Length: 246
Image 1 (tube, rainbow, N blue to C red):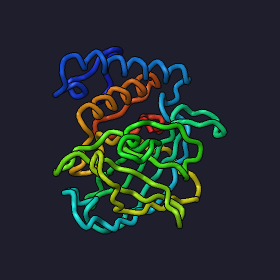
Image 2: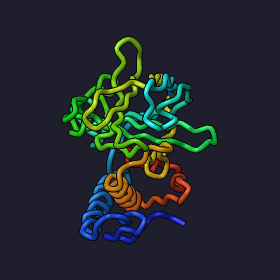
Image 3: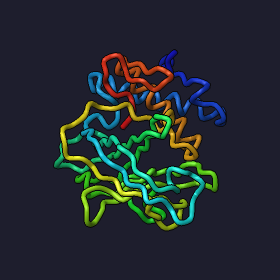
Image 4: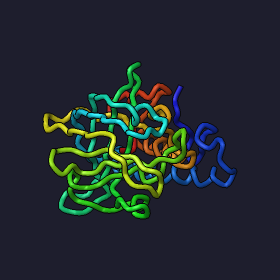
């Protein structure tokens, strides 16, 4: 079973629970991403260039919980981190940068987060921004996730005293509340990983329906343009290349 679909069409899984006018919009996203991927000669449509490394996430938790155990409770996680450039432009030029993070739950299930460069103020945290240096840039979820107690934004903020990032959570217009520190490894690069925050959402922290639908359509189009396939379990394509948008 695959999640691919015919050109110009969106699946019920992609468009369910959304108004009917959303269907052609999602089909357009699918078609654009497929076209860009073909123009890139089979490379991913978005974030085609990046570096994947190991990391460690030290979670301090939150004094006032938000109802998501992974955010609320202390602990530590081995992590896989990918820092990428959205358009694949040369490093001397500004680009839309991405930070993808994967950790695993106690049951071994992957949890994925995808963040993009933005500002950090209540308004600018929802506005994409071009940056050059991936380790000195701030990243956010751009669109809030759905938490048990209400919408939540996530951020990775460059740490001031140690290499890596402070991970923080906030209400859409509230102050950032740090809950973890992410150490980004400097060792050899790892093979790319198929990050997918829709299939691999942190329990209790779900992407909003519009963002989830757009991501599914974008991923499906990019995979189709590359001739890649992804099964329902979230496995990679037959050639081992990554299928996520980050």
